[in-house]
Each structure stands twice: as C-alpha cells, then as structure tokens.
Amino acid sequence: MKRIVYGEVLTPGVVDAQGDVVSEDEIERAAHLFLRKHGSIGEMHSRFSGVGRVVESFIARNGDTHFTQGAWVLGVQLEEETWRAVMDGTLTGFSVGGRARRVSVVEEKEENDAE
Image (cartoon, rainbow, N blue to C red):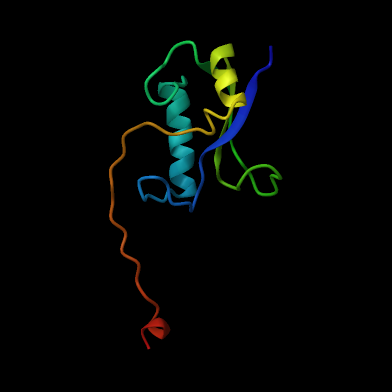
C-alpha cells in the first residue's frame, strides 16, 4: 500500500502563480512551521480528510539529483481516491495554502547598467 508521491512544494527563485518569489531561507522557515503547526494536507485547498498523510519532508540539498537545491520536498502517502486522481493526471503537483505578508522588493541597478 505504498502510494507515495514526492514533489517540490516551494522552489527558490521561481515565480509562483501569484507572481511571488520565495528565498531558500523563507522556504526553510515555511517547511518547519508547517510541520510544527499543521502537518496535514488537503486536496485543492478544500478537502482535508481522506486525502493522505505526510510521511517525509526535507529541504533538497546541493547535489540532489531529483530536486532543486533549497526546495521544500514532501513525500505524501495518499488514500486510494487521491492516488487515482494523481495517476490519471487530474492532480499534478503540490500547492501551498497559507498566509504571508507581501513585501515589495526594489532592485538597485548597478552603476554600469545605467550607462
């Protein structure tokens, strides 16, 4: 009854669906907070029972051949119905649900770039 899927929950330096980019430090904080406070998963941000259980959680390290360095990776053992939805392509990845404080970032141009 394995039915375990692995995937990157947050990946550093990648623009997400809301146009945000998360640093490796923020990803690590989010991963640790998730396990301390919640540790449960849902399906499509709504169904939270009968989906599955987190069985692994780690931050991918330098040299990982499967995941992006600094990414938060979950291993989730799925219940049968959710497993079928993954196998038929209905569910294709993880999505973080949570709260955050949006902070604007202003990038300074190098002096040479201005010329």
